[in-house]
Image 1 (cartoon, rainbow, N blue to C red):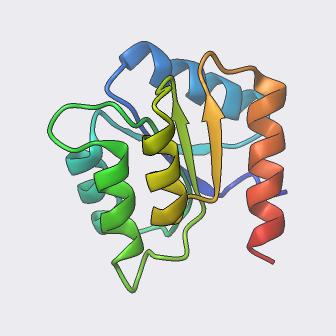
Image 2 (cartoon, helix red, strand yellow):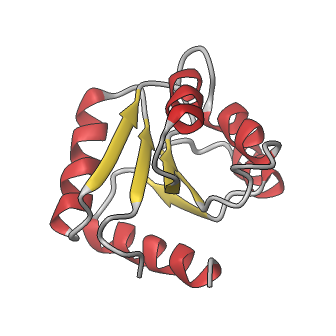
Length: 130
């Protein structure tokens, strides 16, 4: 599992979903969580963070920059391409999931989210970075 001080970036246009994810992460012991309302702001947060981001949780359906567009930007960046990326979404279109897999997501989590499922996905991502 990631150390508690791992910086985690949540990207979701829903304030309540960001709060839910933040609270779940805090309950798991994580202490460094930053947020963004869409992929454009997420990219800014990621690019300007003085502490390296160790994990990204991103929604798919967001205005201005979707999760898939944000994923592609992250994966095309030499500096950030190795960051584990969990797509957290209510998207049901199979093609979007396939595109996300092709784009390099590390894991996929359907909304509504249970804390135990989030923890399992985070543990999976952690095992992939060793």
